[in-house]
Structure formats: C-alpha cells, structure tokens
Image (cartoon, rainbow, N blue to C red; front, side, top):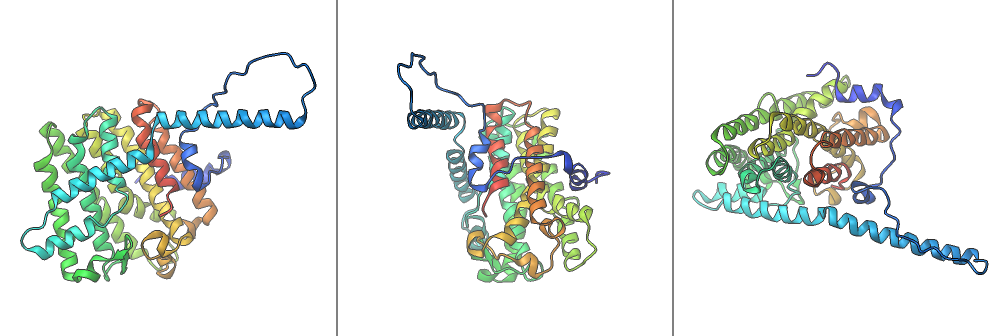
Amino acid sequence: MRSMNLLDSWVQNFSIYNQTKISAGSFLGYIYSSPLVYPKVQRGFVKKPVSSLAISAVITKEEEAIKASEEKMHQEIFNFKGYMIEKANTVNKALDDAVTLKNPPMIHEAMRYSLLAGGKRVRPMLCIAACELVGGDISNAMPAACAVEMIHTMSLIHDDLPCMDNDDLRRGKPTNHKVFGEDVAVLAGDSLLAFAFEYVATSTTGVAPARILAAVGELAKSIGTEGLVAGQVVDLSSTGKTNVGLDQLEFIHIHKTAALLEASVVLGAILGGGSEEEIEKLRRFARCIGLLFQVVDDILDVTKSSEELGKTAGKDLVTDKVTYPKLLGLDKAREFAEKLNSDAKAQLSEFDPNKAAPLIALADYIAYREN
C-alpha cells in the first residue's frame, strides 16, 4: 500500500479544488468540451437602429449555429455510443463462441446463463481500447478481453451466493444459484475462472509468447490474495463494524473492484505491444477508474432503485456495509469521484488524443453511469 491513500490525499487538498459540477445527463457534452468555434459573421453597415428583439433573434441564430457546429465536430471526433455498441456486439459474439454448450450440459448452461446475461462489457472494452491505443489490433486483445469478462462473471456468481452477499437479482435476472442451485453456481464460477486462463494461453495470436506469459501473470495476480480475493476477505470482515476507516475502505476497493479493471487495461497494453512507460501510465489510469467505479457503485446503491440498477438496491445500508457515502457523505463522495475521473484522464495526456478518445469516454461513462 502507498504511504498515503488516494482519498486521504484528496481530503487534505480538498480546499484547492473547485471543480465544475457536471450533471449525469450532460456528461457526453463534457467529454468533448473544447473551445467554441464561432461562425464567421459578415460585417456591414447598419442603416437603422436594431431593436432588442432583432438582436435577440440574431444571437439565438448564432447560438444555434455554434451548437450545431459543436455537435458535428463532436460526432466527427468520436462516436462513443457507436463505439460501445460495436465493441459490445463483438465481445458478445466472441464470448458466445468461446463458451459453447457441450457435455456435461448443465455446467455449460450455468456458465452461459451468467456470462451472456448482458452487462455493459466495460472490462473487455477497456482491454481492447488500451491495446489499440498502443498500436495493437483488436484480435491481439480479444481472448484477454473475453477472459476478464469470464473472471468478472465468476466474481459476480460467487459474490451473490448466500455465504457471501446473498443476493437474488443480477443484471435484472435471478442470480445463478437461484436458477441452478448453490452447488452448480460455485462450479460454474470455478469453470469460468479456469477457462479464462486456458483461453488467453491458447487463443491469443500475433503476440510474442513472453507478452502472453506476462499477461497471464498479471491476470492471476489481480484475482488472488493480492487482488480480488484480498478485497473480498477484508470486505466480509468489515461488514457491520464501526471502526473501519478510509485506509481500510480504499484497500477493499482497490483490491476487490479496481484490481480487475486495472488488469483489463494493463493486459490490453501488454498484448498490444506497449512500452514499459506506456503500460505504467495506463496502469495509473486504470487504478483511478477502478476506484472510481466503486465510488460510483456506492453512490448508485443509495440513490437508485432495484429496477434502475438491475440488482438489489440499498443492500449496503441493510447489511451495514462501509461505503464512501457512509464515511464521506453523498456530496463529498461525488466530489471524490470527479477528482478520480480527472486524475485518470490526466494519465492519457501524452497519448494520441484520437486513439485515447475511447478510454477518455469510458472513464466518463464509468463516472456518470446510471446503473
């Protein structure tokens, strides 16, 4: 752990930040904020006084022209919605092809039930975007992108079990153990975990063996006792306690949530041929958005309904879980999320802005998502 955690550092320096509030509904405009491009206005002689109404009409037309110009420019720069749809469809097809129905059928049905149940596919997209940012091709990263989604799905199946968070709803559907039973759900998660590594090792093409080996090591570290498992254990032991501080909360979420998001980005950078310097910059970017993801998750849990989230809302309060809104208050938690988003995007400043656009957009998507 670092000598000072991200939240402590932010709290100590809070007074120097005076960031503009961005509403959730307008974040796409914020992504592409840039100097206004004013249309050229023909100069001429005014032969008679112009009424205030006429001036207002001129200003309105000019504002409309500016807005239209900006919207066109934003569309030309990066179509985030189109990118999300395209990549999600590509990932969904790759997952469907990777995990097929075969003997014994029940375990494969259980694996596919949760793996193909929907979801935003943020982790695979981060992997692909990082790969393409450093000059790689989507084909280099696709097996790893599928693998991180398999592992993420495993973590959700196990997290929902009665012995863990005991949840009945996930992605708007009954959780795996409610459909297949606890025993099969455990095995489905185990199978996805094992297959994720097999898939990276055997299906990655066009990449040097040393880089594939490095990627496998990175992925394993992110989910073991230095990653997801560590965060889950400390999370379970912290539930219901009143003496949990910011250090412990950050430890939980850097390991439980941020570690796999970090691995998603780093795997893409490794398999795409990134240099050590590029990989480390992307690691820092991912560390920020990984923690950001959890801060936003905590906020959504207390501000959205189960229907909006596709999972049980308000469980953190019911189980007396330590969260950022609980320790900081809702407003400060939102401000911390904005700071993490800003710090994440700062790590991309030296990359080609066109190639970095997907990661910048994904950071904003994580920051301002509604579920």
